[in-house]
Length: 86
Image (cartoon, rainbow, N blue to C red; front, side, top):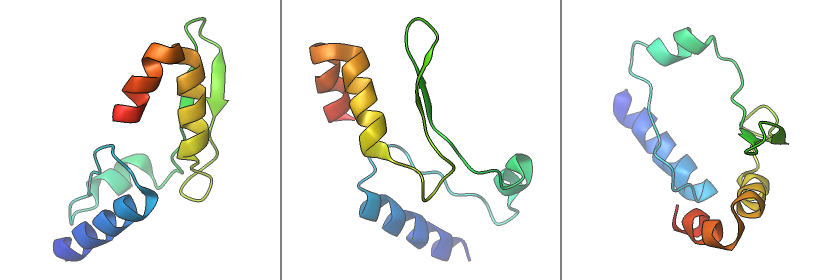
């Protein structure tokens, strides 16, 4: 049931301390089908276009603290406030 999916997503976001929006696939599993269950990854590129952070496949290699540190380094002191507020 959708309510069960919503509860699982809420628990996950709370456990991981996520502040980014959490999306829930519909009961038709359209997102699952569209992405063919590929593992998600996070990549962060610098202004020069070079990759500064390459995350591993999620969910177990999703390391938001490492990604945050790279963003803070790239953005400098002014960016640290933006990252902290996110």
